Length: 282
Image (cartoon, rainbow, N blue to C red; front, top):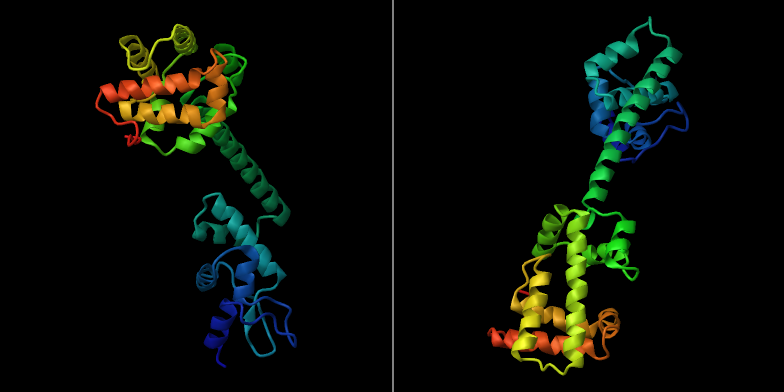
């Protein structure tokens, strides 16, 4: 086996250290140990940055402990942005004390970590500020939308609809709203729910002018968040009846309000040329 064949095998981990010679590492083992590519180690060897300094009994070159330590030092300086040529000059400078050298590396890394942490904090702040488009703290959300409001609902909604065009509309519109804007929307929602309950108790029939006006008022309120078509409105009405959380919410205003509201939405959609049986989210 020639040297080239051996290096090809060691690059893939096919051979380790030679049990009858050096305890050093082949290029493949060294690369796996420090987390760099075999190609990088070969390049560093070619330019004299890090060369395997020991040989096995058969003459194969391997990396000793000092070589691996040098690789780690190279990686630190690469992380700090130094070009390879300058790293080589720094590492080979006989005037530089090894411990002082490491202390300087550590200091530079700590400074970089600090800068990166500040960047992470800034990104986290921006994410929180634009979280689901609602620039309100959880406490403000509960204050505005009531004690039944669960801030986690925003996360659930984003998980379900986060990839949709409507969610993109919602986040864009919501991001520019102030707490007072949200209070106005919450007040309009409360007033509409009260109007629904009053109409249900008064026996207002789905499909009537009064019921259709309430349905349009509801669709307009939803359009504060995203453009709600009559077909989408039907899909939302189905969800109101199909998911227990909605039924619990609306029926608290008046018994049977959830089913009545669905029927009102369906009848209004039919008046606008949408068949509730085939309506889709579009």
